[in-house]
Length: 257
Image 1 (tube, one colour):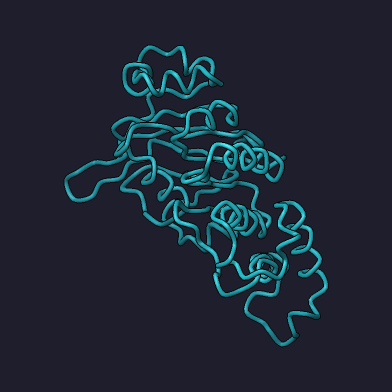
Image 2: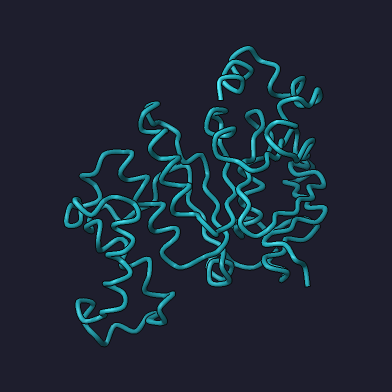
């Protein structure tokens, strides 16, 4: 059995005759935080879709805690311990913050589709939802409908839902997109806190976030991982500079963190 929380082996994905992911291999240890970066159209979202089960690979393997998950349905992968958030906030807008979180914990506690008991009587689910409220710092918004939260609060709620099921591998797709600098700073601190002991992969364009959060960085260009190393080594990698960090804006952002 593999000793890695997540492993990609020569992963490939083609749409028709167009190969989007071209032999990606990656090994992520338990508890590591990995940022996936690259120019627009590099294949980052496709890679996430392959890992989380939205797409089946054309060839290659995805292993979660040593077990193959490539080709499985997203809900099956989720139950095996991998959870994902999306670029577009994915919450229940007409439910309260608390109710959103409680929905997220039900399956992990074994309730599945059995609702013979009133939800209010599910003490373990309610207790876990209350804990999550504190973790994501939305306890003061407990009974507010999700649709009435600010954008940053909705993203925090989605992270709460993502970790509610107890997954040990978390995928976050551009978690800080659309946030102000101050919102981003607070949100990164929140992500650090709620993912302690968990394995994290995040697609992120904000290089300040990348260099402030990641233990390692995977650089994807034209469907290939051209570098996978510590932030310091990636920043100094000439190939990465030429392919991605060569723009003045990216260099300035990376150098400022």
